[in-house]
Picture 1 (spheres, rainbow, N blue to C red):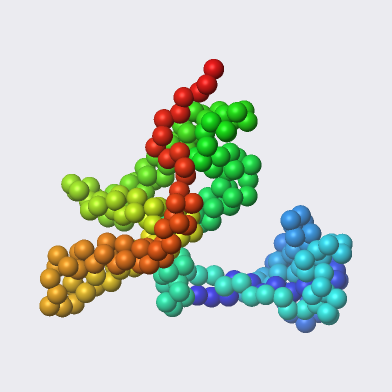
Picture 2: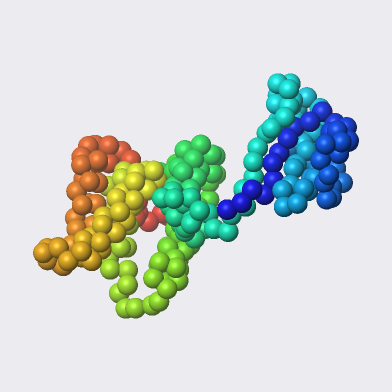
Length: 265
């Protein structure tokens, strides 16, 4: 890891370059460039391997305008690293050592929850799930909504399967899912159809799976069959405890789940 550049906020780039040139001999400078998104002009000055970035705010709406009002000067240090997961201890491998699908899986439940509860299309999906006849009377194409939901669910299953066989275990073996599909169904039911709770349950299952693998590697005198079943047992126990309110489960479950819809003429 090494310092790439140091950022300095200035009133005027040209005046600052003139002042710096009186005290420091620099190798080269870049032409001041406008960064529209930040409403600033930036210019780099190189002294050996060190670069200094001059930041000149444009207008009062620039994010660095407040720094200039306080006198300007030092703003930030930018480091150059080869691999973030190796540079940052402990948190590096957790935050930067995985594929993009891994991070997408954490963001998706929140996006799905927002879609279902905060958007018009999401309310249409919920209406079709609870009462397709009423939704149809309101002009909603129930068949189309159901097909789109099936396509979305199938796409997510396909993405999970691709991740499992291409990234998680980069090989294909028979029965490699080991019943994870049934756990996914149990997660949905016991989490009262809440995407955030599904994420929590999935994290519990994944965490216990990794723990039992380490326990097997340590050679503990515990039957392998019990350790292999432990993630499934613990996940179901936790989800049952979380969802012990059967009334809430019934209220949260789509009323028309699995029911055939016939459009009235």
